[in-house]
Amino acid sequence: MRCKLLLFIFFGVFSFQSVGQTWEDHLKDNMTESYTALESKMESCDKIEEKLPKINEQWFIKLSKKEKYAAASYLDYLADMNCYGNEQQKYESAMLAYTAESKDKHDLEEWFSSARVYRSPEFENTFSKLDISRLLHWYKQHGELKPFDIVQFLQQYPEFQQH
Image 1 (cartoon, rainbow, N blue to C red):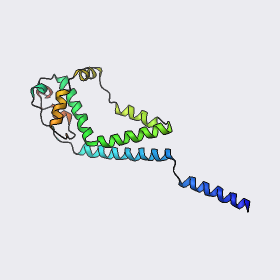
Image 2 (image 1 turned 120 degrees about the vertical axis):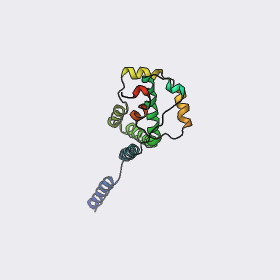
Image 3 (image 1 turned 30 degrees about the vertical axis):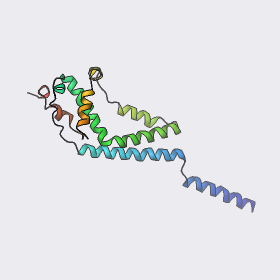
């Protein structure tokens, strides 16, 4: 009788463990689901690119070619965040929760690696000196900016047109 009871308890616990989910597993599943949602949203954002009209304000027109490129890059980032920023925040939050619990830094390190796009030192220098206050003011006035083709946008300015 005692042996049957021990077997019953053993198989009961074993069965429960195989069906149950640990907190760490739950966090990893949540991270995976949020990453899938982010990828899906990024793909749909790529499909809805719109043409960004030329900014005809003097403060923008007077920017150098390098400054226009840096400003357009920042607008491109803002447009992307308008489109999939919520999904990105959910993924980053889920990833941070999983990493903190599991101490598994693999996904976090991959995210750091992929999120940081290479920029030349020259671009970094130009961008760091760019006064973005007028750009942000313009952005706020024009509401929800949709993803756009940065090359097409810049080609509206003479210095980016190929002759």
